[in-house]
Image (tube, rainbow, N blue to C red):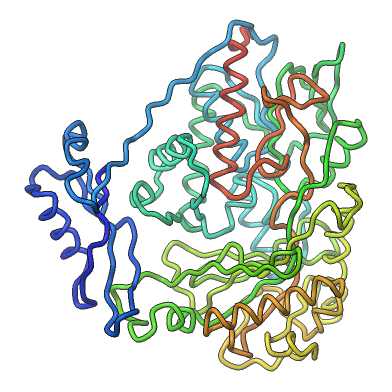
Amino acid sequence: MILVRNIRLPLSCGEQEAGAKALKMLRLAPGRVAHCGVAKLSVDARRGAPVLVYTIAVTLKDEGEESAFAGASPYVCISRKPVFSFQTGGTPLAHRPIVCGLGPAGLFAALLLARNGYRPIVLERGPALDKRVQAVEHFEKTGILDPNANLQFGEGGAGTFSDGKLTTRVGDPLCAFVTQALLEHGAPQDIAWRQKPHVGTDLLQGVITSIRREIERLGGTVRFETPLTGLRTQNGKLSAAVTPDGEIPCDTLILAVGHSARDTFSMLHGMELPMECKPFSVGMRVEHLQSEIEKSLYHAAAGHPALPRGEYQLSQHVGDRCVYTFCMCPGGRVVAAASEEGGVVTNGMSYHARSGPNANAAVVVSVDGRDFDGDPVKAVQFQRKLERAAYLAGEHQAPYAAPAETVGSFLEGCGALELASVQPTYPRGIVPQDLGSLLPDELSGALRDGLRAFGRKMAAYRAPDAVLTGFETRTSSPVRLLRGDDLQCLGMPGLYPCGEGAGYAGGIMTAAVDGVRCAAQLMSRNTPSGG
């Protein structure tokens, strides 16, 4: 793929003109081009009239010719598609490998294993996606929660109900493996070249189901509504996975349970496997009008049809903590993400079109082992305490109603919710609450300082009627299960802690990559079982 940067055009020009200018710079005839599209689009409003700044991605019908364009201009570079080869070890497995969890890490671990003849057995505590969607919709309407079928658990994991963002700062070539698999199963083609690719919740669900069906078609077995309840060892090595339906013999298991599998964390802690408290963050979801975000970003150009939906990422150090925005969802909505009875959890999601009136993002503050005496049990207890406090604050109105407050009120500690232009989208309803009073003073103080700093950086954050809804507690796993250079658990050979739940990823792409990495490591040691 050829990337042509710094193509500057007035607002009256669009993607077609930018593509034509890129081909002119490359001296390329259109007949040689397989695809020409926008990889990145930004606005430069520093010198008066706003200017669109494009990066255009060009692929040729003969990809072998692309390298000849390296250095054609200071603004031209070549992005080469990695070639993957996965080695197979010499020790036969006694049993089929087990993958526990069908979120991004487990899904892609199972896919790689299935494609190479290992016929994995996949255990997923929640249901298949169609039944899961029904459970989520039922919870949003009635407040009746299924602890195993919700926004955290079920086919696809927590990432299924999100913006479907694939952005990552990890420069791992395995990202290309994940992207290619997503494309093969129906993801939008532009994820191959966009700098900030996203799929959207609506499209991601079909992609996940298609990948699972490939795993099954290649000999893998997916057992829905089958939680992992224990592990057995023999001679210090993994020998079986325990489920409510009985034990499954295994000598290898990829543990990809997600960041909310607290019962699994407790089981592993009880087995005295080496585990540490991992940094995470807590806070609220903030909602602004999407139009106000775009005014802050694009200024006079806001609302122009050539511009993409406005996105942002903000951060501010407050003492030794960091306050930052996370998982920003343009044109999205706040969702009810509880997975335990009697606790309120918020998150955000967008559909592919990102066409809703509100933008939302998590505004969170960092916490770490120093806050919990290095004890992962205390870290989980802290999350639960906040979730329970949020539930009790809204229980009198409706089950799983969430406490909320306008930003201006939060900054003053008033507990007021005087709605104006921003209409909140949390589906179970909201109740006025002094959110700061439900948090430790140091954390609420840091969040206030961070929000004031954000207001100095971005005009939309100076709007007092933006709405905060609490609490966002599941930004990442609070624990890390320690593993060695061979990616196996330090206390149990054959067990591969994997993905976000085990403390080795954050987001769809990094979790999927870690799943591929763990599966490849397992393959490098073992050949498939004969049984």
